Length: 289
Image (tube, rainbow, N blue to C red):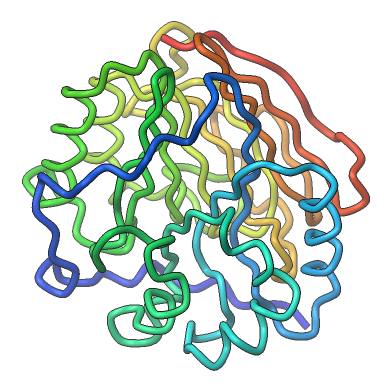
C-alpha cells in the first residue's frame, strides 16, 4: 500500500491566532545536547513506531516532531490508536509541529488536544524553545505565510531579539525536495526572513524520505557562508517515497525509515541519520553563522 502525497492545507490565519509576543518556552537545558527529529508517523499497523521507540529509549534526548503525526486525518482517536501505543510514553520529551494531515481534522483539534502544551502555549501551531546557545523555532507551515502574516512577523521578532548564536527551525513542508512534494515556492517569504536573519538549519517532513541539502539562500541558490541547511526527515513510519526529481542542492537522499539526530553545540551542529536498526547512514558537522 502506497500513501498518496497530500498537498498543503492552507488555513486562514484567524483559525490559528497568535500574537507576535507569544511566550517562549523554558530552555532546553545544557549548552550541548542531542535532539531527535522525525515526522510522518502514527501510521496504524506499521512496525516502524515500535522500532523508533526502542531507538529513542537507547539514545535519549528531546524529540522534535515535524508534522503528520496521526494518519490519515489527525483525529484524536487516530492519535490514541495509531501514535500513542508505541510513542506516547515519550510525551515528556516531545515538542511538536503540525502537518497537513493533522489539519484534516478542523483546526487540528486532535493534534492540539493530544499534545497539549507540547504543541505550544496556544493553538497557533508555532512557538519558540530557547537556550543560551541555540534558539529553536517550531513553526506552522500550514497557515498563511505571506510576508506580512502574523507568523512571519513573530518569526522576525523572535530572531531579532534572540541572543543565541545558532538557530534551528522545525516545520512540516520543505522549501525544496527531491520527493514528490518539492519545490514549495509558497515557503519563499518565510525562507527569505529566516535567511536574512541568520537561521542555520531547517528540518521538515512531508516527503517520506531522508534528504540533506547543501546550505542555500531564499532563491534556492547555494550559499556555503550564510545559507540555511535543509534536512527532510519524513521517516517516522508512513510508507516511504522515492526520488521524483533532482532538487538542485540535494547532497544525500535515503529511502527508508529512521530519525535525524542533531547535536546542538555552542557554535556548531553535528548530524547523523539513523535507520530503525540504529545504523548511522549519514553524518557530518557545520559551523553556525
